[in-house]
Length: 306
Ligand code: NAP
Image: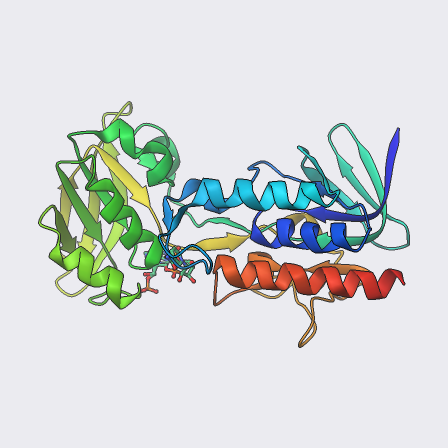
């Protein structure tokens, strides 16, 4: 059976839920499809201290549950499903998941982004055997152990600080001699005795006995010296890639994989299909920005459908 709706939103991060709140209030009865991770990436973080309205901070998971119930309060229907193919060549638009076909007059894409990988064989080999992409999810397993966080952005610094709650020692391995994380977070990192920064180091290999990770092999980019940083766990935090693969060929997408939207707008290259949040945002991946563009997409959908 085909599920029909005036508008379907793909994604349940801040962009998707905010679009849901606005559309619900506009009586559009949106269906929001959650994708694989309901609540998006924020459900995997700990404290969110920079989302306005929560002066004491709020847990990422709690923030997303609040957004969800706000969208539901105004009539959004949230379904756990993942779209695997789309046909945007004519209206109504067709979206397919493994078990369902959806038809919609308008679509809002808020599919976000996923962690970037190094793309080396040993990284996959030791996935869940020491290599992880989420300190909040897996940090607890490394209680009393030594771990490394790989990267130099906000995520890496945040994860390194978080891991000091459980771990004996935390290395932060970064490819340059300066971090790009917020200065206030950098200072917390420098002040923490449990953290040692390994500068100018390029990850070469994840090393172990095949069953369990025992080290991260790095090459110093100045001296070319190769050495092993001995760890029980390694948390990869080297940025994100947009979840836009299923729209390749249907929408204009830039060379980095971000869905192109028109200036000052969330309109994509197909009339009636809008995109918002991190899947369109190469620079400022912030929950509040994603939420703002979700609101914008909703207002544009309303105008389009009218
Ligand atoms: P990011 O800002 O893109 O930083 C990625 C880091 O990984 C950079 O330090 C980069 O090195 C390094 N890197 C990238 N590719 C690499 C590779 N192939 N090998 C080795 N290192 C590599 O990503 P992020 O930290 O995940 O943050 C993503 C966005 O979310 C940012 O806009 C960030 O501000 C935001 N965010 C905000 C908060 C917050 O406000 N509390 C928390 C988390 C994330 P270089 O520095 O050399 O480029």
